[in-house]
Amino acid sequence: MAESPKHPRILVIRRENIGDLVCTTPLIRALREQLPQAWIGALVTRYNATVLERNPDLDAVYAYQKAKHRAPDESLAGIYWQRLRTIAALRRERIDWALLPGGPHASALRFARWVAPARVLVRGPGDRAAGAHEVEQCCNLLTAMGLRYAAPAARVVADPSEVEGVSALLRARLGAKPRSLIGVHVSARKPSQRWDADRFAALIERLPVAQGAAFMLLWAPGSERNPLHPGDDEKAERILARVARRPVVPVATQRLGQLIAALSLCDRVICADGGAMHLAAALGKPLVCLFGDSDPGHWGPWATPHELLQPASRNVADIMVEEVMHADERLRARLPGGAPG
Image 1 (cartoon, one colour):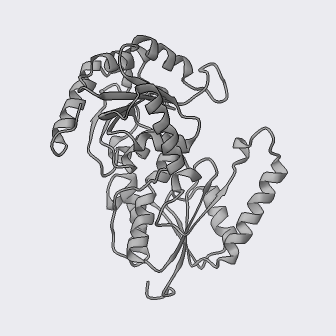
Image 2 (cartoon, one colour):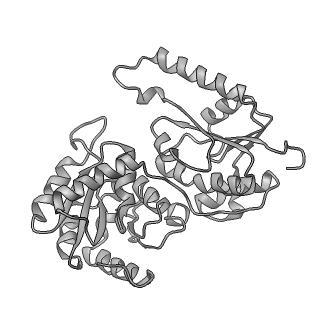
Image 3 (cartoon, helix red, strand yellow):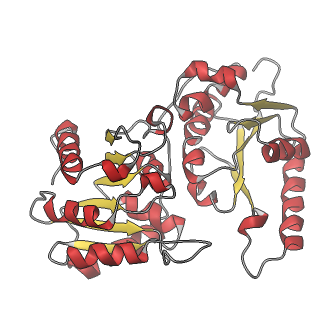
């Protein structure tokens, strides 16, 4: 940092999916720890911006809308006009460093060029030397800035109003706060990560739980028949019909902030690889995670206790209910004092 200002102005540009952005928060956290007086901002998509809300390591979050994600009442002209305003605002910040931890994606490079920082750092093949995980490779950009390499835990902060909303659902359904809460997230974007309704139902029916414990069933809302944005309403209905005698609170998470809040209330979480898994890890939740056709060495939960199951077929359909039950038992045994059931 010898050639940089004493209090550098740093912009992190990350435009990919939820999990990618969550895996970038350790880099942001390490920047703040080593440069407490720096101005640190992030440029992300509007779809993901909630991941960074209330993050204490950031001074500002700028979000833009991808044209393909525009709402029915949004025009392309309006989206591009707002984007130009965002770029103009960032140019006025006089950025010293633009960091591209997602690599040399064309759109990220364009944004970096338009913002006109003094320096641009792009993650490349050489950053694999830091380790196999996405977090490790993102954080290796620190060394190119002349900083100490570090890869702390990810950080996501729940919105208190969203937390209260989910807490109210729990109270309405259960009558009181549960002694412990097990989150079961049943949605997954990739087909190889989708465990079917019958197995989720059998798991909830058979998983031993202590008196006063409860489950929270989480899913992406919408019909599975929606060709543009399929959800898991029908899957959730099938599960709930099977587990009517168990203490289960259904929460179709309408907003990303609601999902983060719901996960923050759980004592542990069972889910497939995906955005919810990374959010739960960033909230410090112990996890049982089901991996299909993805690399757990690169995308596994970061810096939180977890049990990871991946069959040789790389399809979660080949994971048995008993395997998940045993993984949950092992996870609880590893936690300080043993986790309540």
